[in-house]
Length: 196
Image (cartoon, helix red, strand yellow):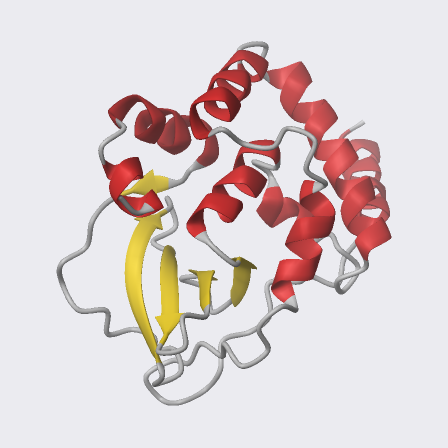
């Protein structure tokens, strides 16, 4: 049984991923017409999120596979070499999109700093989350000691040939943002000062 087929059968896991990770598992039977991947890859939608974006599994004739996030706002990137490995990263790094947004253009050190900040906020804001994460780690047999930030960083550059294109042929943009967590803090401080 594939990881996707197993996941579809796990109602409790799917509900937890949807509620706490905005990873909405669903089979898709309709054709995907708002983006394309290289012709030698076959793709299958695995999940979506609240923005209308999609997570797709892609595999070519040589057996090379990856999980790609295709954003509804025009960003795309490879998140993992397999669905299982992506789920491991996701469970450990639920704020992965923020980590990429404040990565300073893809700098690992900035991604780590952002992850630390958002982890602290998450734990403080949701006392129940630690328990949810622990249950998912156990159910998914995930590697709790995985360096999820490094893995995500490496995966984004793992398959440069995986270019997602819009119907007009233009490539989707990188998921890596130019901002950093320091810039976010400065912006928030200015807003607080203005409201004081």
